[in-house]
Length: 599
Image (cartoon, rainbow, N blue to C red):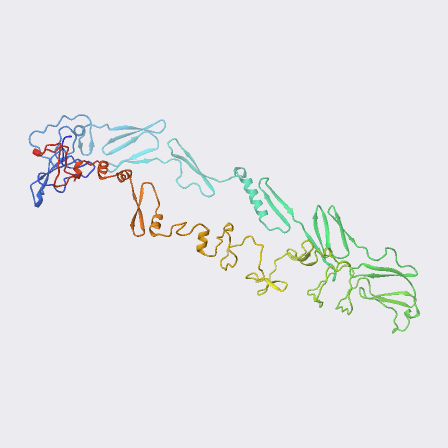
């Protein structure tokens, strides 16, 4: 290969201009401005040139055959030949203008004095110039006034449109436009829209009505809006009516059972049958025998309760003694009268009067029974605010032959939003509560007098359990036997034995902790990476290329030099180099590049 000699240079992508310095007689070429620079003279130590001057290149001198921009003033001596002007060149254009236009007293010569502009339909405008005035003739709706120099004012003729604003909240502006886009008429029309012109009028009205009705308050009526069928549906909820009896008589309720029927619940002496929305109330039979009472020789006797019902009726033969004659002495007893629901008086024979209690007794004040009180009936009703019982034991399900079956369901029921019960259940052979049991603070659950559960833990007597899982045990002491490996334990009591049982004995099954091993274990392996130590107990990774691996596996230095592509000169000393195969005389050097670098 031929020898190469390169001067200093700068590529065309760099900045234009000379290098900041050159050595004396050193050359440099800037491709950015195509200029060759030379280091002229010396100015100091080291041979640095005193000046850097441009000596060549069309960046420094004009070219003969290419376009080039030359700036700055230029002075030419001799004849300067300028080609004859041709069309569309700068010189010819100036010459043409100079020949065609002369300006005298602001008049324009040699130019057409009028031109025509397309006008409205069927006509046109002609603009004529002269003496600073432009006159527009022809066409419709245009006039002109030209005053100051170089100023033309075009005034549009008025149309039939009245100037002003059109359209507001209650009116809409109406306009007539011609083909040139000019308004020829304008006015206001009141806004008037019928319901048929509103595309969603029916739907919006239905939604508003449905929202007003269904969104209001209803008592006993449910209102829903069916938008799909545009209907408002009313549904009357189930109603209950309570009717209260007289003092001491339990109230009863009438509730709708559906299908136009009613049922009567509670109360005494009433039953009901209701069909087809008709309510019939049937009074229970009393002990009164239906029939006629009173005759010429008898008088009807009746017992009436507080509700006005006859509880007893009979005939008594009329028997009047002398003492009953009205003209007898006024201080004699002439008759006995009972008090309703308290005392009954009857005459069972001549001179005989019977005083007793009626079947239904009402006591207005307190009643004290010193003996036993036996109530025989199906229902006992106590309308009292407080029930005080001196007895220590209340016996429930007291039947002739008591069994667990007869006791099933016995207990206490408390009425609330839901019925709260505490009952004996035969199926589970246990007392059963429908609600939570809340024990006061400091109290515990006991079995046979021994605490088994408190608010904070199990009692000490609880030594066994059938638990198969527990939650997280935060604290505690394990005092049980060892847990076998099969059950998740180690079967050991010491850490050393546990490691041995699990096959993790240090020094036998696993490597003891080592800082160097830990450092290596902390590295993340990757392709073409080689671990190495950076200090005691620290390690890192280095890149190991394919070439590096080919050099490492060489058996000796000679093989390594072959891998590196080194010849025999690689084993010679710098002060004792033997070069064979070339001529040293006259210092002929082949295949050498001398590079001046860049700037």
